[in-house]
Image 1 (cartoon, rainbow, N blue to C red):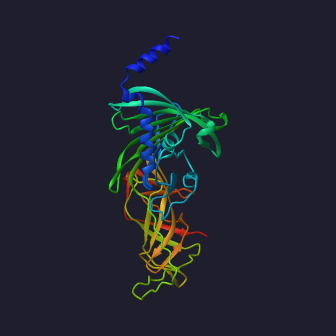
Image 2 (image 1 turned 180 degrees about the vertical axis):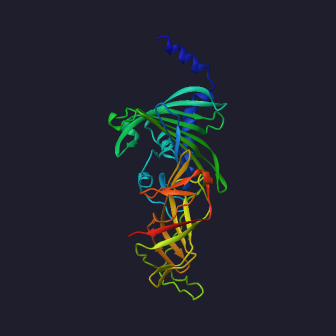
Image 3 (image 1 turned 90 degrees about the horizontal axis):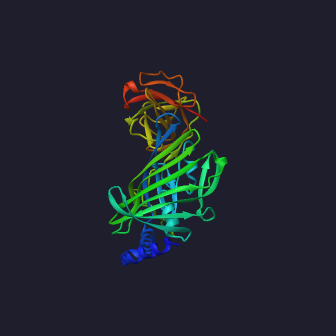
Length: 383
């Protein structure tokens, strides 16, 4: 009974502009979110794992393109020609990953009425004054999903957001999952997202710049450290024409011939420079064909053709790297072929590539340094 008068007296002493700050913050964030253009950023994810009793170890680094299109998060590998409306798990099939940190949590909090807020007053955030508000979203309204080893559950969540007392920009959102079902084997799941003003084109927008995802299990703790960079507008152009176009000889593009590459052929690919300390899973890779590719006497692809693929595994150990590359395309000026290649197990290993694992991973000694440059690799075509 004594608490109520104390709280009421405190409220009477607060400046008038602070009594209505939560509605003003929500109004400002609603305007920020609704004004955001469709945009895309490069998302770099460093994944670590800490087993009970040991120090945390970096598992790998992923690089993706993430886009916000009409309020929906979409993902693609760097260099892909288009984003696709599919689950992130279809791109990243191993290890821990998460989505929602790019835009979804902010939209749940500020573009809907499902969260209950509590004013926690002024606090310090990174050496600067901030306004803190706690929130809670019930499971029935959250849409927050946890997925572990193909098991999935919707959970509620609570947390805090921190806003600048002058600009009212949200600077950080912290999210903690509630009532996690025991069958998932997860004891805790937390997400932290930091926001900042970034320029896209001629305007500045409040966007996520970093985030951290933590998931604790009985025997280990996994963390993802995420950075968003190179943000730009997501644009697409299309043209409708109701008459047959007239192409002159000068404007007609050269025809590209699709070529079927049979299985069992060997490609000699020279790999350009690749820094194994800076590269990430998802990065595009290309190799240069150093000898004509022939089937009997037929020329299939000429010397100098470009094999295009990407890194699908890059683990860093104390004495070696485990690298796996998947190639998908072979291009030359007048032709193209879809390819599936595997590292030729019969190829002579070097002081750089010490061995190849049955799954296709290349074991690369750290003694040769972290940079691959001008290495000639032999690959075989598969059905």
